[in-house]
Amino acid sequence: MSSLYEIVDPGVRLFLGHEAPERIYSQAKWNEGPVYFPASRSLVWSDIPNDRLLRYDELTGAVGILRQPSGHANGNTTDRTGRLITCEHGGRRVIRTEIDGSVTVLADLHDGRRLNSPNDVVVKSDGTVWFSDPTYGIDGDYFGNKAEREQSGSHVYRYDPVSGRLQAVITTMQQPNGLAFSPDESRLYVVDSARTDGPDKPAHIRCFDIGADGGAEDRGVVVEASVGLFDGIRVDDEERIWAGTGEGVHVYSRDGDLLGKIITGGIIINLCFGGPKRNSLYMCSATDVLRVPVRARGINIYRGAETGHE
Ligand code: MG
Image (tube, rainbow, N blue to C red; front, side, top):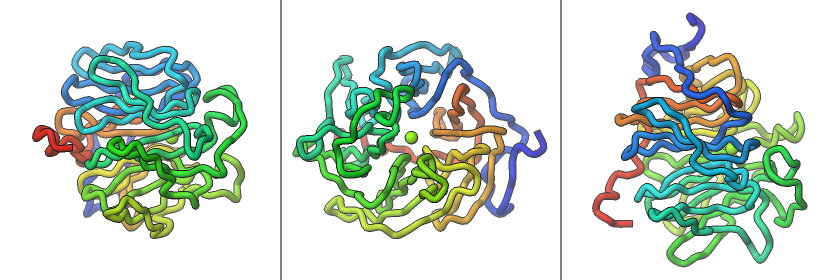
């Protein structure tokens, strides 16, 4: 385990060093979309080919099925009141699970045509829902249902639950995938994972400045993937970018400098911070979910939410 952690910048303390990742689940086909719920000390994530949402109880260690079929769910997140928001490859939509358990469709059509297959999602503190819409869920029958693309491209969308408006805010990427806001929400980091479609295609993270009007201005590539490609990313409360890669997790500064690595020995597809202090890193490999305590903290997306302000 001596090569488990790679410290590139010794001035930045990211890892505890002595802790090896703990396997909390190993029975999946392809894990993605982890989201942590502090109030119930639980992790929810998607096992896409098995068409189910799973839930891990952090106190008992038990894993059970939360929803099956799940519409080949992929990315999950919560809004600031703790409601689960889910991207469905099969349903080709983004849904919200209400407090009473009913499901509300937030987005399924753009310009009257079906979305490709929403992949990953994040909620801004103003309540707007931002999600990526690459074609992975309609390219074949393993991660969804093979179908024709109806949109002109693969975009990042912004859904405003107040007006009901769905807007394509980033239309210049090939296969947008994981996305995460900076702590102050002035920047949005978005993965392009189009390398899946050919060796000359993008495998990088881009940064966009987010305007007060919700517009996104491309600030260019932050970092190119050096091992495999990127899928899911998370930003910690010091704006370091934690990214799944072909060999584990890479941690970058906001300027794209590599700070450190967790070498798990295989791909990490998606990840999220959890635990009562937001300093547990949950990592999804294809079949396993791993967890390790780190010296970073995830962003507290619930800050201010107790006022009821939305
Ligand atoms: Mg993804």
